[in-house]
Structure formats: structure tokens, C-alpha cells
Length: 104
Image (tube, rainbow, N blue to C red; front, side, top):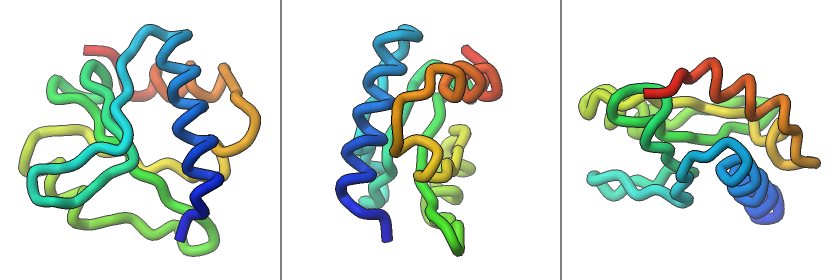
């Protein structure tokens, strides 16, 4: 389980990146099947955007329900290690992340 303090910092870091790189980030993001993901960005990852989910060590478990929803809705799904986004804001990390996802 991910601690609330880490979630708060991760959301803050995504908000900083959104402002700096000019994208809209919605967090939390509710899927139509009642499942909640960490966030959503409409213009990256696929024509239907990217659903952002978090995972944590040591198990790095992913949510199959979210992945299935994304597949059914032609939406890119990215599972990020909370440890990489819940510390100090790292511009370079977000720049590379956005490059990897690709802009649509």
C-alpha cells in the first residue's frame, strides 16, 4: 500500500510537470467501471491519452482491472514506481517520461 504522504508529493510533482511542460493532469482519475487510477493525461501515450498508475517496492504489483480497462478503451496505461516521483521534483525524469509516452 502506498502511503498518503507519498501520493500527495507525487500529485504535487505531476502538477509541477504539467505546468512546466504544458499538459493537463487529472488526479485521481475514475474509470467508468468504478476503479480509480492515480491520474490521467489526455494528450500523451495514445490518441485516448494515458492512465497513470502507481506501484511500489518490493512487489511492484500492477492493477489488472485498470490495465484491462485501458486495453478495452484503447488508452495507454503506465505503471510508475512511486519512489521515483515522490521525492524532490526532477524535471529530467518528467521530460523523459513524456518523451517515452509520445505526444498526440
